[in-house]
Length: 251
Ligand SMILES: C[S@@+](CC[C@H](N)C(=O)[O-])C[C@H]1O[C@@H](n2cnc3c(N)ncnc32)[C@H](O)[C@@H]1O
Image 1 (cartoon, rainbow, N blue to C red):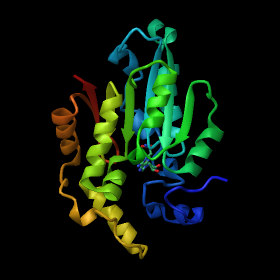
Image 2: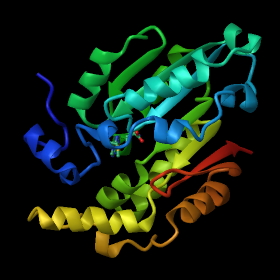
Image 3: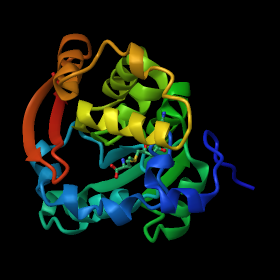
């Protein structure tokens, strides 16, 4: 039987109070943040715009902290099925989504109608990337063409501190040609900590000691550009939740 690997709560707690998920593993996330909020900012031609990284016939996409997979599937359809170019029809596109919450992954797997193109696995990125490397090897690719890291940075930062955040970004940069990043702004950290306290739970382990604070997206950009060989190439504007969608490319 699947267990919630990092959070054991009654699911009804989360439905009544979505702020109760300490890893951002909200069971009903897409009822309050539907995929369209982000997809409307991302051009359906993105994959063609990025070009192909090599001669391989397969393009691999990675969705980090994919929750129950609704955005992963909608993103795949938006980029692959809605795009009409000949080039995109020739290349096979596969997406791998992963999340530390096994129950969310089970739901994603059950609802997945495109299992030959989209797969979901349970994985805590902080514990290592071997499974991601295995997936790359299985497909004969050296990296993911595009990695989505949407609304995940804050949860890793709050639970694993500054070093956890930097480790996340470095790990993703080491296996990705492009990263689409949506970092939660600092005001979200305060709300997340406040909600946790309201529920009578102790604060996030690292909240008070974080040195990386303020403009989180800018800190992430600095780290990716200075230490990970990436460069910011585009901003798709801000979401309805006032979060920037930033696209990075390996230099
Ligand atoms: C707020 S949700 C965002 C879901 C999705 N990325 C989106 O933007 O629609 C954050 C997700 O990140 C996952 N997460 C948090 N820390 C993680 C980690 N260390 N490894 C894998 N997933 C993680 C949570 O379980 C949760 O499902």
